[in-house]
Length: 110
Image 1 (tube, rainbow, N blue to C red):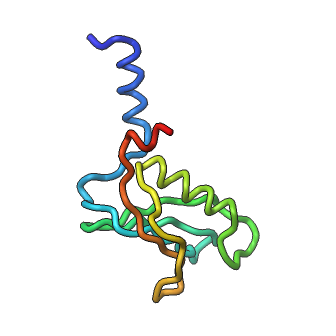
Image 2: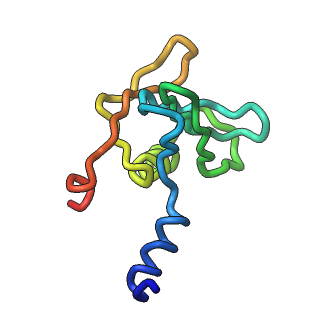
């Protein structure tokens, strides 16, 4: 039988977003525009596939990502134990992208 503290930790670990280990090594984060409904989506590219993360919906027409999207991207990457290793740049498809790496648990504690 688990102690209440361990049971709570186990339940929280199941609910928190985790990095999908079956997709391999994380390579790149991309902010892409969504054609239907407007807004943006975060694409996390791994060596074996891509994970899609929804960003906050927008009600007004969009031109480029604002602080709300960048804050949501930082939170999504941190929740998965990932961090950007370089500044945002524009790729060949005119989307914002940056290289990412996993962060060790000791470094995340702050």
